[in-house]
Length: 113
Image 1 (tube, rainbow, N blue to C red):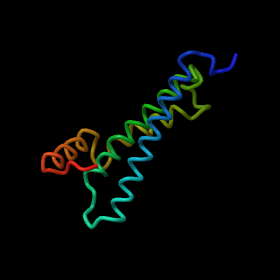
Image 2: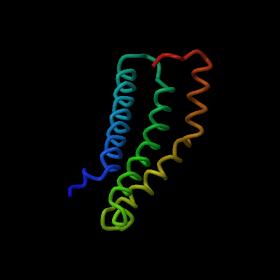
Image 3: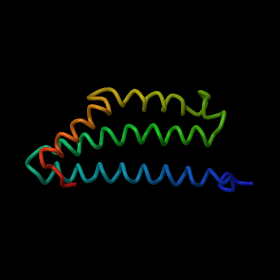
């Protein structure tokens, strides 16, 4: 039996793919705005920081789940990646601060994405 035959595994892999795809496209959109607009896209930068750091932790957590007990060992390095992803939610403004920045920009009329 292959790993894909387990009912929950393909669902978790698809969720990881969706998260990674969304994060990648958010980043590309922000990069385009930085290249083509005179103002720094503060809201989009905060969205990247909030979404991508949380997304990384979700994806790594699912990978740990897929690998079961091995996911917690030093051998696969997933536990180290999970700690790194969790730590990345703090520097340069926590996720909560990023969400406050996003909301402030939206309340000031920055509703374009």
